Length: 195
Ligand code: ATP
Image 1 (tube, rainbow, N blue to C red):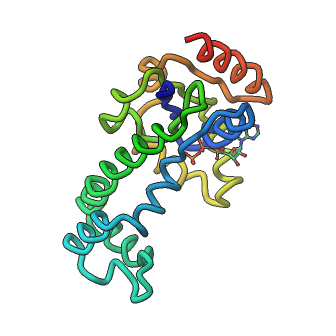
Image 2 (image 1 turned 120 degrees about the vertical axis):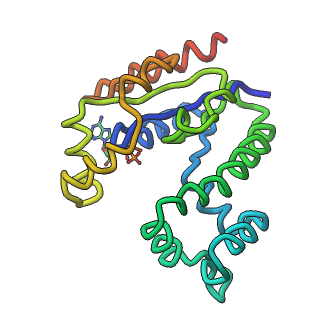
């Protein structure tokens, strides 16, 4: 079984970009957000639990998740997001564990997730990498990427753990203020190969 490495960071830190560089080095990367969305379509336990919690209308007649409906429910009710997470996260965790067992050729695998420290997830990893960048840079990048306002980025950031807290809990930190990110990734890759 390969080593499991967690890759995390706040909004706009550059997790996805860093994950892509690791992929280019041949490392399998599991993107939690994408897999969670897929599992909400395909996993029977998630489906039945969401229907039980929020009603039949969270799925469309076609069987696809009704994202508009679910977003409405979450927006109108603070507890709903917690409920959705409590339904989806354990299944993602199981799915990741099954996925790891299939990556028999890899020296290590990476799970990318924004919420590694917010859930108990961090305990599952051999090492954790945090990606960070200066706040003003992260804000500018998200405004550009999502064509949204600075205020909406600040609002999302205020709900996340502080950069400092994430950094002190991590084994490796990647500073993604500039293009100098690649040498840092290669250095970490080489250290992980030594383990
Ligand atoms: P989120 O948690 O919001 O999904 P993320 O941590 O995955 O964010 P990315 O999407 O990888 O962040 O990066 C945010 C934006 O900044 C993207 O548009 C990305 O292309 C850009 N970006 C990331 N790193 C750099 C960099 N070193 N130089 C220039 N642009 C960058």
